Image 1 (cartoon, rainbow, N blue to C red):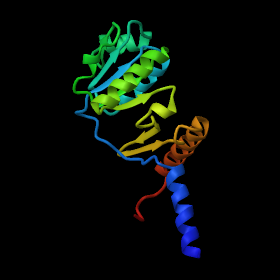
Image 2 (cartoon, rainbow, N blue to C red):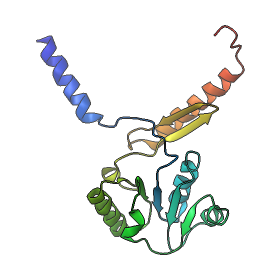
Image 3 (cartoon, one colour):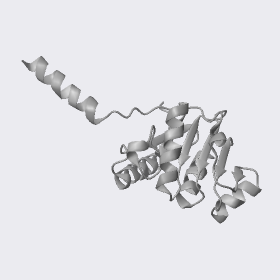
Image 4 (cartoon, rainbow, N blue to C red):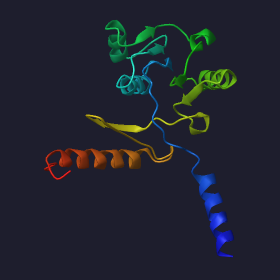
Length: 174
């Protein structure tokens, strides 16, 4: 009887938590960010910590994104997105303020087998954008499965504070 209960509880956990965290080397992966607003800019800023192979596409964009394009950190294309922009893409982030365009990007990516994240629609995300803390060789990504961004941020800050506190500790005992 106890085993059956355990199996049912385990099944419920699997249904509730289907997100698996993993670390991916993005250095040689083509990433496309569609959108030029604040959310797209934040996504690009985070991704730049891991790769320079980023194309941002939007008719208009923030000053910061424009500067990243001018300095060569990002391949910035200032026009509406086209299906061919996704050729050879490993992942696409749809961060526009046009839900119809985001839906179309999602549909195309699913057809083409491209990982996609629609920034404002959890149900249309193959992956979530984690809160990131990096220090030396340590990279920590935190997500609350797209449900509670403020909680994930608090956890990231707590990890950051713990890592910074450990920097002052004597490591000679290791």
